[in-house]
Image (tube, rainbow, N blue to C red; front, side):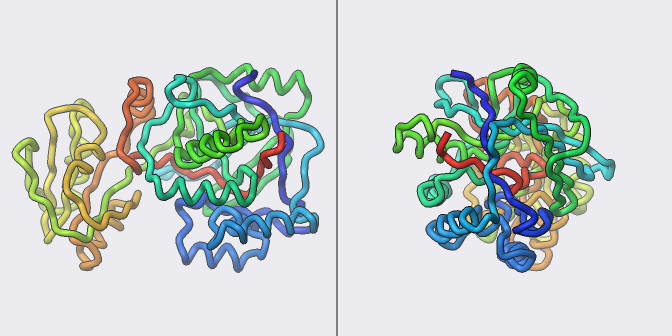
Amino acid sequence: MGLVKPFRALRYDVGTAGPLDDLVSPPHDVVTPALEQRLLAASPFNAVRLVHPADPEEAGHALAEWRRGGVLVREERPAVWLLEDSFTGCDGHPRTRRGIAARVLLRRYEDGVVLPHERTFPRQKDARLRLLRATRTKLSPVFLLHEGDAPAPAGAPTLEAELAGVRSRLWRVDEPDAIGEVLAGIRGPLLVADGHHRYETALRFHEEEGSEETAHVLAVLVATRDPGLEILPTHRVTTGSVPELDGGLRLTELGGAEEALAALGAVPRDRAAFVLVAAGRATLAEADAPGPDTAVVDRLPLEGVSFTASAEEAARAVSAGEATAAFLVRPPTVREVEAVALSGGRMPPKSTYFHPKLTSGLLFAPFDE
């Protein structure tokens, strides 16, 4: 059985549902209450009602109603889709990331075919499982990396939408020979970049059902050499007591967060490091061993932890008294993430933030193929 296959997408009929810009949503893990309200105000058919519902049964009812009313329509032919996400990178320059949207055969991690790089939170997977049971549809794609190439699309895109400064364009590829050429460019093993909870939940759902129809997950596959790949840091912000940093770390007191971040960026990648911002001070902490910065931070007894990709926001929360401390880290490189996965290791949860997140609502995939 092939590892990657085309699928018959379920997607919005913009003639019935309205402009696609008003219908797409980020994946569930970055939807804040304020953002959810903005998306719901944009359209009663916004995908946030499916990917981030108050009640999974509500999402199931909405999905069925939208299909009956022609808001969502099903493709007649199986296809793979070429995806381009265009955005402004952290360096201020325009970037484009290319991927292939398809369905991927679910495999246990120990098989060595699909590899994780982060640990997951059980409670989040329980919530996603209830949603899969209620909708029986793959609502948001898992972001996978591979060692092959993505072909450059040609002609006008089939679908196009913009969300939060990210322009997503999709080209349908439905001729069998053309599908074969696209899939031939994918090289394994596959690495989960983002969507560990979705992948593991889909695997658990398949083990419950035990059917061929539930044996695949919706995914976007991006080459590890893609010039548009960008990883943001995941800084930790805490509301509990500030832990003492032990003697196993080399500590350097610095004038402020900006100076400390510059010093952190100069630390060689052969050792882990982080910056502690607390009580009007900034301290650079360096370990003697290599590894992801988050692994060193998460060994500390932290309480009331939240995460942000913005060092400025993390430091502001401390200065405003909204947090007791911020732990600023460097983003791992793609090769560091790959090395952890290939070695069988796992980074702590929320160690990587592949930017931008894949947009939800462009394509759905019911569990019936």
